[in-house]
Image (cartoon, rainbow, N blue to C red; front, side, top):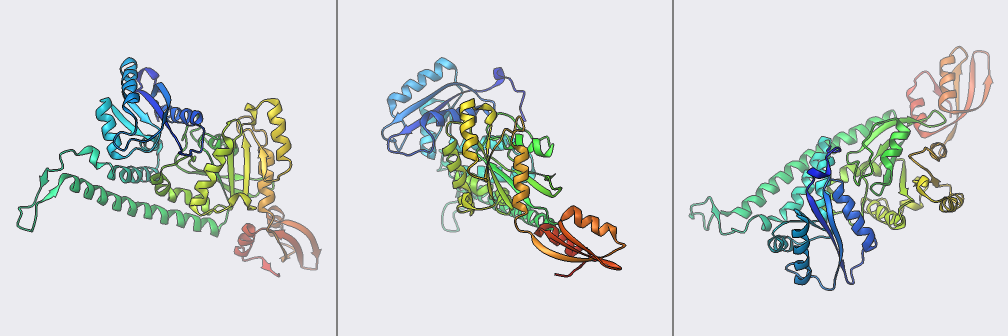
Length: 435
């Protein structure tokens, strides 16, 4: 991680957001430009110039009109810019022609996010997923790399045609790599499934933190789990999923999972490549959506997150019992806005105002988790030998003991127990379950 890289050593970049007439975008042009600048800063680029450009009609060959490109050439020269970031999806032809026209490296939104993910990945799985997404993106861009498509390689002409062109060879090499990485990711997926299976045998409920990038998930995760996950005011500070065991107020143990942040217009290659990581959310007992209430676009960010969850198969998760919203960063709100948030939250038990920085609301959050996980308790009656104080103590610790009937040499214990501890109880052979 290049946390301490100084701006003087950073590559100078400019960020352009094309506001295309008639094309709907989830965030306002100003918010989208600001987000793109922050994405660039997340990989330590020195953004010396940024602009919203109104585009009436996209030019198929070069995207922008010549008038704007001439102005941009002037800005590039004046500011010694080394990289142009266009915050949209460019076709391979458009990217190649822009580079020729501007005589400078040009990347689009997908390439920028891929670059960030490549820097953030720290685990084998994360690196594999980044490489897969990068190769999938690169495969469609081979036209940029090879202008000499007439170049032939191999073949003597006696098998009915010329040899393999260079671009065909490169595409085949990439396809082979994609197949290999997918196989490696399948192994990782099977390992994850085994780990989930092991957790079910000694089951701990899984609580997954999801949210827009930079909403404060990792800061909250660190506060609750006493972990030391990289948490900084950068977009995509967390990439690889992290899991820790924590205790709820009742003493119940759960697994808290911190996941990659979402973003508007998340490239399709990334959603598909990171599906294995995001499957941790699919299997979670409770999904916690961490929202940055200090961001003026927090409502649209919520929709972007829900859209990704819907793509993963969590349809209408926001209307289900196992969904909680944490309205985070209340410490950054004005007193008036904070009061408004607190009043609104009172009307919905699934909404909890929090500050991951100060810890405000975290006790209420843990208690809410406790209550939700205790909703599906069942009544049991257990017969325990009177001399077996250890098992009685276990029940007191892991269930809600209602009454105890004392008999000559045994006790009948009536208790409420959740499905997690019910499985543990079944595994304790010394206890006979009556009903």
